[in-house]
Amino acid sequence: MIIMESQDTDPHAPNAFEQKKRDFFRRLALSLRPTLNIHKALGLWKADNRDRHGFRNVTEHCLVEVPRCRVLAEHLRLPDAVRKKLDEAAILHDAWKQQEILLARQASEQGTSIWAAFARASEEFRAFLVEQHVDPDVIELTGGIGHLSLKTVESLLEKHCTPLEEAMLILHYVDDISRNSDWVAPATIQSATQQKVNALDLRMDACKERPLYRQLDIEGNAHLGEGTYAAVLRVGHAVEAKLSHLIRLKSGKSIPPVNLPEWIDTEVRTAIETGSE
Image 1 (tube, one colour):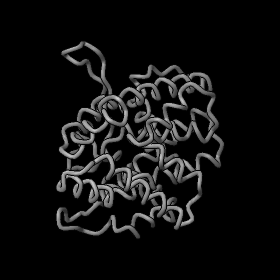
Image 2 (image 1 turned 90 degrees about the vertical axis):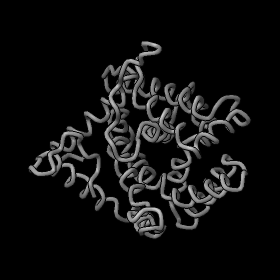
Image 3 (image 1 turned 60 degrees about the horizontal axis):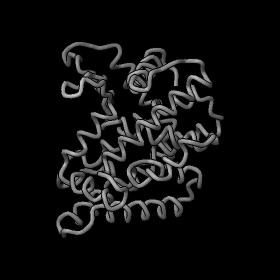
Image 4 (image 1 turned 180 degrees about the vertical axis):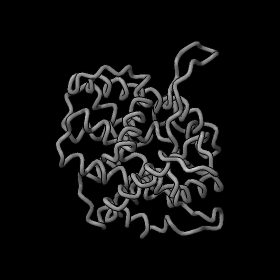
């Protein structure tokens, strides 16, 4: 499993960091094996007709989110019990992806609501996790990602959050900035507006280019009063600002919100280099 492959890797030469990275994620996967077994049970590691790798990339994506969540959990000083639940939720959050995509594709082919298809998949996933006796707090955290969670997440922005609510903000944000299993894209100056944009902006732009998500974006107007990805972006940046504020309060570090994704990955790189998890 190659996770977050560096762009400058020479495939013909040994690379110390790449080896450390593979070892880091191998240890991480082993430490979370009981939860990862749900991925296996759901068939995410089997080849399918579209891709010989099947949905194995979903597991890589979920694994990548764990150290990102841990960086924020550490700097927000979350209790160990909540951090453990956050780890499990990060591993599980996309475990129903195969079923979700199948329902969305069926809706697209039949000309029915993509939004409703995602909502149905979310309900099915929650029921499945209950059947698997997953901790109710972990189930709540897994429901804190994506467009269906926007109203819940937005309600947390102006209140003093519990540690579990802060964990939900963390997972929501990390999932917003995580594209596949790649390192986050660096912040850049947008030529049209001369404004600095970061991984959150760039990921939402990429989502809107995918056919299934274009329709979902349009349907957001009926549910959110604005395009789905405009709402995701607006709430995502508000979460980003709140997390930056909480880091400053609890850890004394001042991280400009727009720089938060790259700062998180810098911390992850340090953990890989030092072998700390």
